[in-house]
Amino acid sequence: MIPIHTLIPIDKASATPIYLQIANGIIHCIRSGHLRKGLKLPGARILADTFKIHRNTLQMALDELVAQGWLEIVSRKGTFVANDLPVMRPIKFSSNETLAHYPEKTIFAVKKMGVESYAQTNFQQDRNLIITEGLPDIRIAPMQQLMREMRSIEKRSGFKKYFNYGNPQGTLYLREELSSFLSDTRGLSISSENIIITNGAQMGLYISANLLLKAGDEVVVAEPGYHTATLTLERAGAVINRVPVDDYGIDVNAIEMLCRKKKIRLVYIIPHHHHPTTVTLTPDRRMRLLNLAAQYKFALIEDDYDYDFHYSSSPMLPMASLDRHGNVIYIGTLSKTLVPAVRIGFVVAPKNFIEEATQFRRSIEFQGDTLMEIAIAELYKNGTIANHIKKAIKIYKDRRDHFCGLLQDKLSDKINFKIPEGGMCIWAKFMDADLKKVAEKASKKGLTMNNGETYNRIKNYNATRLGFSSLNVKELEKAVNILVECI
Ligand SMILES: Cc1ncc(COP(=O)(O)O)c(C=O)c1O
Picture 1 (tube, rainbow, N blue to C red):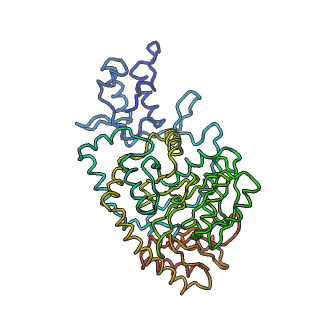
Picture 2: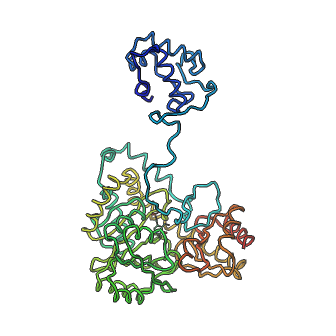
Picture 3: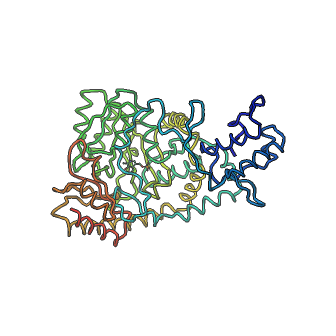
């Protein structure tokens, strides 16, 4: 209950009787929205005590309000603000009175963050046909096991300590499990000290960008590229240099030319399944890039957001596993491995970087979600995550093949694409259709797709990403049929 006595000043010297001052004050609070319809008022004795008046005086005020219809008494339950209020005339507030509505705008200027330039990210709609982006199929994720682990934390002896404040670097338990997992599967010879757990890959990127950059620092990104990362780097002060991507990944010659001309501080890459084009950076380019990084001492942020899903032979090990000089900041996430709502990401880097990142993270939040971290650690430990990855790779590979087959059968004269070796999307170049119109029409028919706005801004490729992993075969067929109708 809000402390209404602070909103209703009582003037004992006034000619208006105290009970009326209180009744008028309560009416004002109801009209101003401070006391909402149906709200239960404290008992008369408590109210009298808070106003420091005699209970009879308070009762007179309540009787008056009931008589006027502002309050109603429900037997054996108490006194409530009436649901059916007397007709409320508009009231004019003088400058020192409270407002009827929460202010719509601040009185001061606020920095514009350009939110409209992010791709659409809210997929919490009741539609099942979403091919925007590479999304995991949330229906096959081991959510029951995850919830079971969450529930069991409370019951396990020795786990109660996790209800306390913890370490902004992430719980040691998860960092240990993760470092073993990453050593076994990605060739990273690291320990828990080389990891900070973050709220998704995006937070890892934000922290890294802010630790590395100051205003005016030269940064290299790929074109086309991952717009959200570019924006994050820019906000940390980066001057962006864009270099092209071809079928073999980012153009390392172009990066070398830039290094000769200016002091490059950071290169942001997605070498495994480049976002948006899905291409994999070739081994020789990787080695050349690592050598350049060592020679020119720039930081390489390796964003490996969907490492797990590779469908040809074996996935290429991260560049971080070959780093001998301390150039690479490696970023990963469980958003695609499990579901995006599990906000567990990680940064792997030399210890000094992780220590600073931990300090920096403390100014964003004291720590991550310990309970989720513990539950995830259990899933790593008991093999649930490894088993899920195995299962999901099979399913997503079939879906990729089916989706690409459908597109080849039905849209080969409208869309150009290469079958991706990994990831959860294809990079689809539309030959002459207007992508925005296609996306608009598709949306009306129940299919949500990316209209490519963020990818075609610097250069118009008339292309977008079409995700295949979150839909089953039947749904993919429906989605492609809608695409056929809309192009
Ligand atoms: C290339 C890339 N990096 C990072 C992310 C962010 O992932 P997270 O959900 O873990 O913040 C995404 C999300 O799609 C992505 O495409």
